[in-house]
Amino acid sequence: METKEEEVKVTDEKHECNCKDKEKPCECHDKSKKHDKHHDEIKKLKEELASKDKEIEEYKEKIRYNQAELVNYRKRKEEEVTNRLKYANQDLISELILILDNFERAIRLDDNNLTDELSKFLKGFKMMYASFDDVLKKYGLEEIEAEHKEYDPNTMEALMTDSDKNYKDGEVLEVLLKGYRLKDRVIRPASVRVNKLDDEADNKNNNDDKGEDINE
Image (cartoon, rainbow, N blue to C red; front, side, top):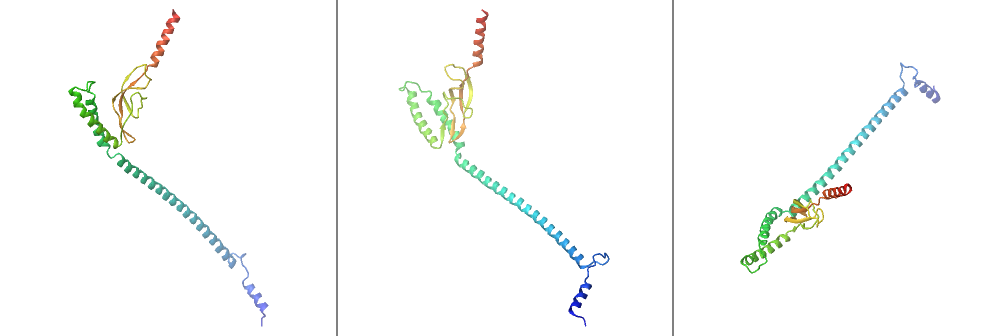
């Protein structure tokens, strides 16, 4: 009868490693293959996880971009609605300005003699003009101050030029047609006559005079 020690020895002999024998793969060989297989699977899973993380970041970036676009779109729409409400009467007021012009042309016909029939007739026009002008001002209409101001292409339109040494170069000499703002928007630029001093011509004339003095 075999003892326990002998049984263990026999068992060990039966499971002796045969790695050196290629024709007889052993258990340790199988464990090595399984380990390599598990390692490849883990590596593949890590690569897939990294790819998914990259996709998630791309989706997050798209979401942030779309959210920013939505905010900007809302701001633009709110600004458009605000401007529509702010300048809702622009077309109407632009037409009423033409009537205001006609009032002013009629008033300019008045002379210094306030007792004649024309002055008496225009007195009513002046009262209507003043009331009409006040109403338009309540709705945000503002006259552009231009006479004897520096020419501003943003609020004025130069229809004529003149040269007057008593005024600065670029100064508005005369307002031909009044300009107006509606709140902070120019709805009609002022038509003006602008002073234009020819400095180059003056310098040329001075140089010619000096040349003649030298020749003499």
